[in-house]
Amino acid sequence: MAALAIMPDNTLPMFSYRSAPPPGVGSLYKADAALHAVEEMNAAGNETLLIESDHEWVRGPVGFTCDLAPGLPLILLAGYLKIDAIGFGTIAETAYYATGGRRFDDYAQGADFTKWQAMLHSVDMSFYNGVAGLSEMCTSAIARQYKFGYLAQPCIRGLVGAPCMSCIKCFRKSLIEASMSGDWPAESEVSRMMAAKPIRNWLSGFPISMEVVLAASMSEYQGNDPLLLALQDRVSAVTGDVSFLHSWYGPSIDPMVPERYRLVTSEAMAKYIPKMTAEQEEAFRAFDITPVMDSKEDDVEQFRAVVKENLAQRSQLR
Ligand SMILES: [Zn+2]
Image (cartoon, rainbow, N blue to C red; front, side):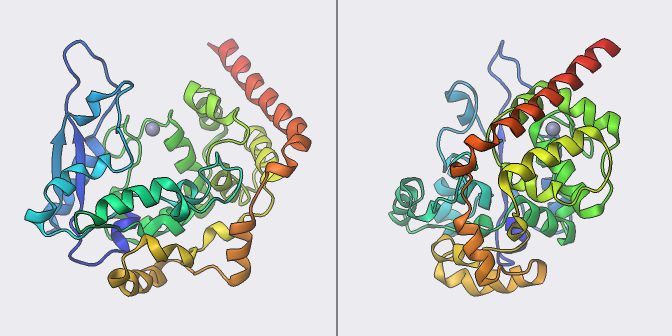
């Protein structure tokens, strides 16, 4: 949704809808929230495509086969629909901290970007990754202001307006939202979420994948829930100050956004999010926790012990 908010008015949104599983195969996938969003946007006069595909079933485990896969329907229809650029929801944590969150790594210089960009150029198309310079903190802030932002629900296991609250996306989103609204989840809810296996496994990582955004949201926490305090201690001890994630990393626009769309994108961006200062851009690029990782093992172990204790307490309650 944030990507759409900063693209031109004639942008054509498309949802790639995974077709039903082959006979005998189970799936937790629920597209209800996305289907609802498509319906609402069309009802509001904002043409939005829904294209069903069985392509995700060609691999095991099920999912997209390559970076461009979610956009395949649009690439195939590009001539017919007159599409010259294609945007994905690639945010800064993915574009620049794909090192598992350890350090900055310029995605635009890497093989993943240059290879696919060359492929797109060969069919007169380009990437239009407008949100590549935005953290999930920023995209959430844009969604809170954008007219269709209320339809954004990243969880693919929940129902309309009722995300599962047991997956990593739900947990991360609830903390990011709370950091902006000041309305933090209740202790019992935090304890329940942190006991859910996918969340528990994710949090035991070092670094935790997308740890920077967790650090940015937890820096706003001022409550006294022991689990959230432990999480706050854990991420702040490792990542330090990552307040630059509240602003847009402007240099991402070249080459992530085609030249002809840079002005409209920067103008739209200015309506929602401040641009990083030169110092913040430098901090964004200089971010690297690798040198301190060994000395942070104790903090990580302490946090893992708290998560384990939470699980033990919850199983006693059952
Ligand atoms: Zn979920």
